[in-house]
Image 1: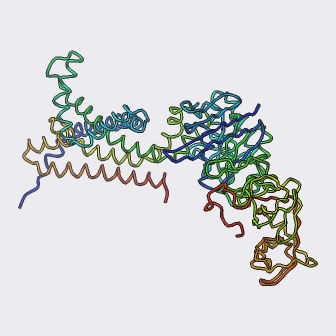
Image 2: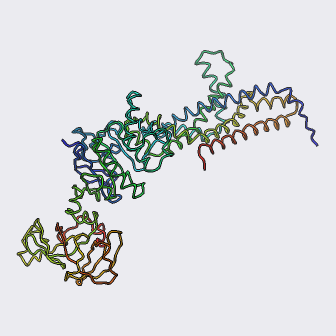
Image 3: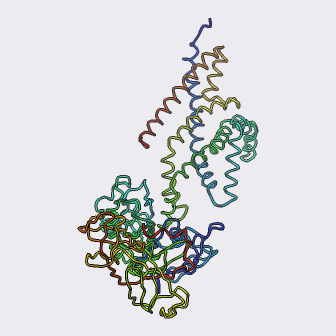
Length: 226
Length: 374
């Protein structure tokens, strides 16, 4: 019978918290950039200007067709060199967090753009016609009427995608970055208590994600009763 | 100068021609109506006028300025039009005030507020400006849609089946109200509908649209009493076509008697008016009889059998069969209540004789002309 030993957890909490901060930082940053860049991609995809919609379609299909782990690895290997050259930084600067963030943001944008595209399309066509009949340009109509309604409809989906994103941040372990999962792994490895640490990490992920998804459900009920 | 001019407008989707060679014009301050069955092209016409669609041929001119022609389309937002949509298309995330003020653009806050208050008062929604569209009834949403369209003082207002989502009572009341409001604002308007009562209640002039063409552009009175072709005769009001024979320049004989017409009756042989003198022509025509042309009169020697009856409150609409087999409709005050199969006396009381050459090449394929006596 395996004897559980949880004693390495209390002492490593500050280190684990530092890891959690990295996880949250990546998540928040990827959500914000993902929504902004995703909105632009969605508008390009729906645009009648062919090159724009082709570019957006290509971008979205590319990122949705490759595994996230691979994208992170690409960015881990390529982006640091690129940034070093661009800003004249000495080789070997630790750019793992930056490249992970860029990788996540670009990858998640593809998913966000699909959610936002569906949201824009869920707004009845008549709304755009009504705006134009009232003298609004395409851009004004989007900003004042279409996007506000689209985002209102999309809030639950965007948040759910955010929760998935938070779980996915654990994949940064490929670049040996100490996010929450990476930190837990390192502590377990150091103390020979890997099973306990991974169980603990799993419990923490479960509590956070389950609580968040319950919150999303309540939000959804509030905005879309019945 | 006419405010809106449509010249030989053509619109097609692929090979399917939706609007063919339509021309008409509307004077400033007039309310015109495009009336026709669903799928006749009337909404497409309206969308071309609004600028939502490219046109395949012809031209749309607003105040003498060309706004649509093949290869050129002034976008809707630059046409200074107002539009009321079938589903209203109110902005659900904005209050009534914000909806109405939406098109006011550059105006100052005080100007906007004054205009919004004026319009809400005009449509009878004072003090409701803080509400959201979903908190209003269908009729109220309709009024907000109208106020929103009128707010920027458009040159032209387009109404696309604006009352079709309302119940009948409200529809009738609102259509009269909307007419008053449009007249008060001095707005030129075009209404699209398939409901002739709505059209009659609101419009100064009506264009009957079928198969992508204007069949007749006229006043409501003339459409009813002097329909230009069989389609219009059938589409507007009720009635039957009975066979008749031209016996004089202004005279037609039908089973029920002889009719005297103010205008000459055209001969079916295409000779124009042969005064019925050329007996070999046997000028056959079809005469339109409205239910109010056939009057119930017990003293009359002409008898007809009651085939069917529809009680309408003040009147009963009888379907009658003459001894010769001809069927006519008759509108009779409802205290003359006769049983099915009973024979009653009738006589004619026709103000306007409407006759179409029989066997003429149809204005529309025969399949599109529904049975008149329904």
